[in-house]
Image (tube, rainbow, N blue to C red; front, side, top):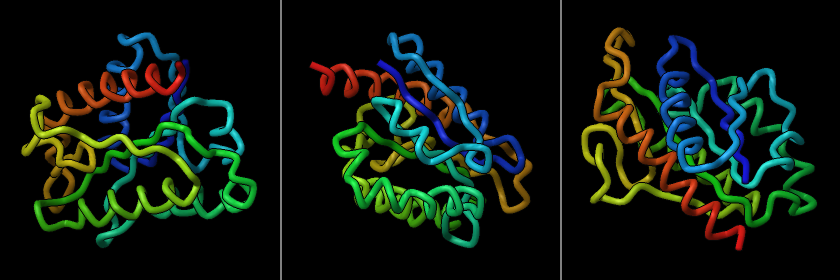
Amino acid sequence: MNAIIVYQSAYGHVKQMAESVEKGLKESGVEVNLSVASETNPDDILKYDAVLLGSPVRMGSIGDEMKAFLDKTGRIWMNSAAKNKIAGVFVSGGGFASGIELTQISLYSTLLELGMVMVGFVNDMPGYGKGANQWGPFAQVGNEGKDGPNEECLTACYEYGKRLAWAIQKMSK
């Protein structure tokens, strides 16, 4: 079982989150590849059982490098080549009304178009409310991005990795 985490991280916040998700996955027996969106060939996702996307919030939407990566998945969509892969998202934004949910939903929209199976975040999981919502983990890093992901967020990312690993294992049977 394996997963790729494709992320964009201007200030290092999304990378921190990606590493926490990676830890949860690895401790659950999943091999993980962390990959920067601007350096990732979209065809690379076809080698993995799960695809996770981490993006900063930019004006209520996906970061530019992540958007460019996703825009190159057209051939994958045309061929339904990513159908039934496990998928999830996590994001980092300024504050409560920074567009966190809009960005999460935008990422999910593309993954659903690609035929993937979404894994959300359950409200009884550690970190829910202050570090995650039903769509997945989020960081509120302040309007200037100085705060970084809080402990609840990093815990949520770790727990999300474990939940994703569970889903990968279930789908692999």
